[in-house]
Every structure is written in C-alpha cells, then in structure tokens.
Amino acid sequence: MQRKIFWITFTIIGLIADFALPFWWALIATIPIGLASWWIAYRSDWF
Image (cartoon, rainbow, N blue to C red; front, side):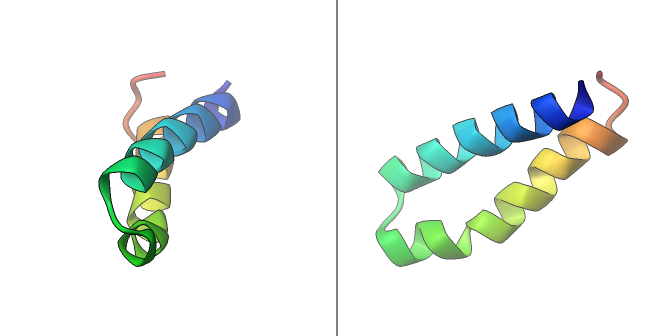
C-alpha cells in the first residue's frame, strides 16, 4: 500500500511540476518531489 501511495503522489506532483515549471526546473524539482512523496507514503503515518 505504501509503495502505491508513493507512486501516486510522485506522479501527481510530478505532473503538476511539469505543467507549472519550465523543463529544467521541473527536472531539478524531481528530487524534492521524490523526497516529499517518500515522506508522505512512509514517514507521515497517514496511511
């Protein structure tokens, strides 16, 4: 379940960044998006 939540949040936030930011900013934003998705899925105890 946590892996599924990770990939769902990573995809949704990543798509928002792709449309809202220029290409290079969106590419650089992938690392913080991954960290935020990891925190939401594994460390936040929401799921």
